[in-house]
Length: 319
Image (cartoon, rainbow, N blue to C red; front, side, top):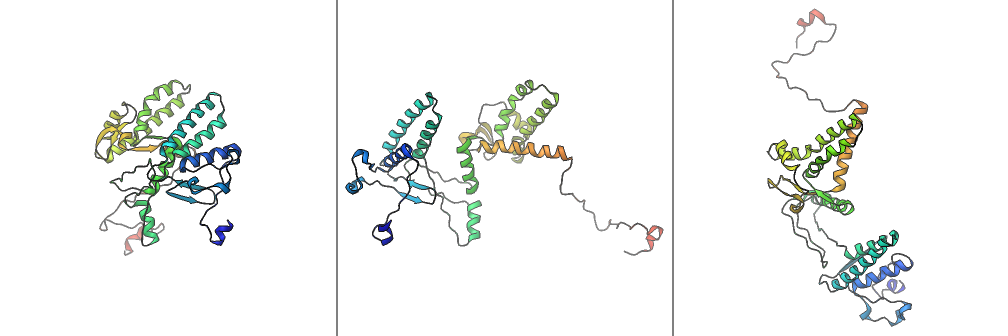
């Protein structure tokens, strides 16, 4: 840091992740990822003996206050070593799971995830802040991938909301992806009879029928918006295998997961939870606030309302 302040070296000092043996393991993973040599007293290596051959290579690195991002070289020169280390960690993970050592297994999963991590950069430019915000939310542009060895991005021909896409990706990583277009709900409708059989109360079984009917509405409404009969499309979709559904963009019945029509599982479950919450609020309050539709009246047929108290003299008033 002193040499950096004096301008002698252009370096960045970053605190090593983890503690104890975990820190050593993370540092060994970083050395494998970058092709660097692990310098430690246990191996008889000292910083004073380090040469340029001991340093590793990165395409890009970003050091922030709480985290550091390391992007591998585009030529994939260390990809084989990384894959070998991942396989070694998977073997250790199997042993830890067999021994019911959940904490150590969780650490190994984190190390595998970091080694296998992929980063994509989306570059957007604009003359003003308003235009940039509009592009970030709605503009169709060509994604520019960060050159990592295992990353391949194909530009989509349709407009993309990048913010929504990033949030959907995070949700998919957390809980997985399910087929979109309402087909996931339609698939789950086949289990309604089993659920009703396990319920002792008639009111609960009635509620199950209501939920079942509501779960078919997204698929039906999407088909209706595409110009087809919603109930017919729903009837054809709900009896099919997992992933099968109606693609409103191509007007075809196909495997939506393979076609790229998918939703994060968390979004699908939250939508059902929120719908049930709104229904519960209406049942408890027995009231709803909505916009009133006012019927349009022709000017020729218009007659103003007469104020109370005018009585029979109303005809003498001019309007």
